[in-house]
Image (cartoon, rainbow, N blue to C red; front, side, top):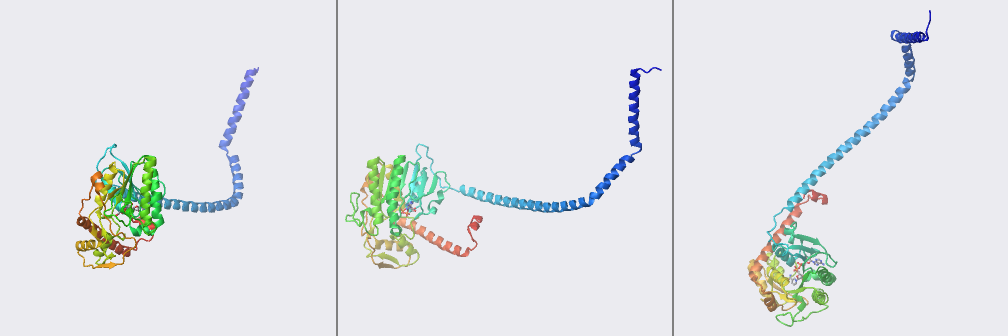
Length: 450
Ligand SMILES: NC(=O)c1ccc[n+]([C@@H]2O[C@H](COP(=O)([O-])OP(=O)(O)OC[C@H]3O[C@@H](n4cnc5c(N)ncnc54)[C@H](O)[C@@H]3O)[C@@H](O)[C@H]2O)c1
């Protein structure tokens, strides 16, 4: 028998295959060896089990602590989310309230095209005269910026315009410079009644001097026309009757009223200095006593004193003999005059007042009768530097502005008495409700109840 090398290779390969098949068969039919291996392994593992259990118990404890902490974290996050949702709801509620406020009904204003619409600054626009002027300018379709430090003015006087697209209210003291873009400026900022301007005489002088410089400076920068609200007080206790604009006055420069009288005289001087030196377009209104709704109830002046005393059935007090005279114009007449002066080409000072003169005594009786009170009229000692006569010569205003007052005294007084009566009611009402209202504990509560 001859074995070729090829045959020998075939035999060797067959033997290897048989060995492999037998090995595989053995493990299938007899898995003892495998099990014995597992048993050894299990034994080893069992021996380690005690240790492992301990580790596991510790692990469990750690896991429990971790889970508690995680649970607490989740609870905190949920609570925070809930609080955020609550705050978001409140915010939304407040936003919708504010939006609703914004959509309040404004008085209907005239439409002016871009060419005719002016941007007008009114300093002291939250005061008595200023707020009426603002009404006129707004109704006329202009854009109005009120600058006021609210010393004697009130937001309430202009609140009916707050939120209107043509209106802006700026809290600012004119003793500091201000930067605005405007076409016209009515410069009215200054306390006007003796108790107010005498309260802080230095501030009164600063307002009328530094404040006026700031306003004239602004006018120079932006090329705006300025109207200065001067006063009949520049005539002091006059020796000339009626007072015409050519009269230089009779002023005590060191008396208690000097802060106002001299302050206004300097304001006029400054205006003409700026006009000559800087070419600014200036208008000067010398305003005489004015009355009407929104005037200060406690400004210590004749009209307000007498109306308040009459409405409250108190004695009507006259300082001095009562023979001193005053002439009073109604506020709408003054506003007509100011607007006409601003629009005119007349640059010299001009008196705006009512030339109809009455003694203080007469005023007391007229007001007493209109209110229908039982108040008595009583005389007290005269006050220092109280002018004896004051009556404007308005021939300039008639000639150059075609202006003269229209509202009869009794008509104006009726409107003013009605306003004062409402204000007194309001004061009584708010005093009552402030006594009742103990629910506002802090600022936060006020915001909550908006
Ligand atoms: N009412 C009159 O009978 C009368 C008479 C003559 C002249 N005037 C002049 O008319 C103007 C207005 O008088 P009124 O009766 O409306 O007085 P008012 O006190 O009611 O108004 C003056 C306004 O100017 C504001 N003001 C005062 N100092 C200010 C400052 N430093 N910065 C910003 N704002 C300031 C006040 O808060 C107030 O709103 C005044 O300049 C006054 O001198 C008024």
